[in-house]
Length: 159
Image (cartoon, rainbow, N blue to C red; front, side, top):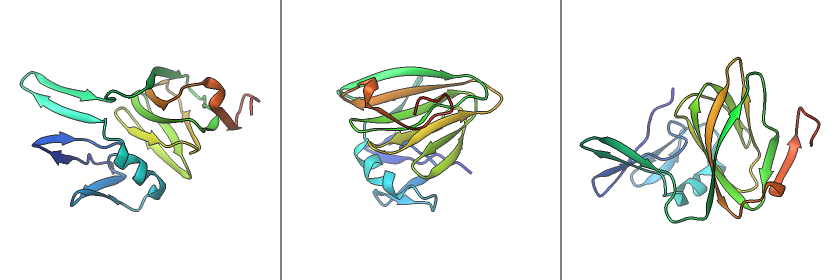
């Protein structure tokens, strides 16, 4: 069961990525037994993710004064991005529509709308769709270069 985790900071709520897989506890992150130990230190430094309620609704901030590249990626039904890693950038993914399996490191997670993932440098990752199209927001942090994409496996023969 995925539950939203929040940390309070000055009366405002911050929703960390991978909500439900880790949670804030007494000012720090605590693993909930899902094997994402390697992601926890990276998540602690990803403090740009912020949510604030206002009288008219809310806003979510994904970056704050950082070098970044933003994409919306569409993956057609029954397709998969290569299993890959990057040496020079980290990525934040948020599922905008559809359902998929997301691989981060050695974990595979069923993802749906609003699921969020932080992918540290040199961590293998991929996304695989089922019978529906998936759109997700990708924010890359660091020097962006498509040639930094190291394909480990690829169903299209590009690895």
